Length: 281
Ligand SMILES: CCCCC/C=C/C(=O)SCCNC(=O)CCNC(=O)[C@H](O)C(C)(C)COP(=O)(O)OP(=O)(O)OC[C@H]1O[C@@H](n2cnc3c(N)ncnc32)[C@H](O)[C@@H]1OP(=O)(O)O
Image (cartoon, rainbow, N blue to C red):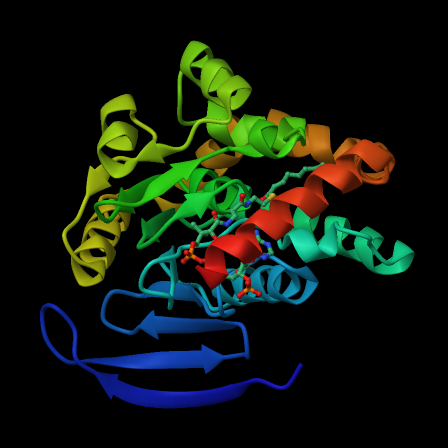
């Protein structure tokens, strides 16, 4: 994919920084050359639905951030009310055989890249963050969320089941008892509830403040040896990463089998219809 590179002067909370910016259609990477922190922005209207292209783009951008020696990665959205609506249901509803395989593989790749990223990661959750959106946020090491939005793994409410590695990300943030109950209920948490339970680390009034708080979190590693930090993170996350790495093929087949069940297709169709009806009203 062609990428345009540009250098620009952008205003920032603490002064004008020269920022290296890389843009694709669906994500933007901006590296603040004073802090060395990269902001990775999802930009797929209308709701940042995670389709094949956005997932591939995300993975490519994460690799680029690791490659350009950024000091950290902040994940956010260009949409003022939606961080990500989760997986694009259109990829799973009446799917094309080849594309749906590529889609799930791209999701596995994106998760492995983000959860296993060697750089410190934080999510500035500037909008609703259901299901796959929550997966991305909980794959990061720190979360700052704006008020009056919701976050959670609501899969059971759609009649689908979150795979084990979705649960792993959730479990890396919440105690098992809380995680199990929330997943079984398909519970979406408000910002206040998420803060109370520890699903997010901080609340912020504006996106700028959220980005600043994420940058402050990443700044806490400034005096830590980066190799020791990266290896420590890797060891903490190794079991979950290795589990998916070693079971990728089975995970894909399991997904395909499940998604192709008539009852699951029917449920997704009804859910999509309800979303569309709601959007019209
Ligand atoms: C078997 C394996 C399981 C794998 C695990 C699955 C993980 C997932 O991520 S499944 C997806 C779960 N996501 C959701 O349940 C979120 C659904 N969306 C919403 O709740 C809302 O759209 C919102 C809160 C994210 C935003 O609300 P709002 O700003 O009011 O926007 P609209 O609801 O009007 O939506 C605009 C437009 O976008 C379509 N849309 C929304 N979400 C999705 C989606 N996840 N996939 C595909 N399309 C989506 C919605 O239908 C509207 O479309 P149009 O009517 O064509 O404008």
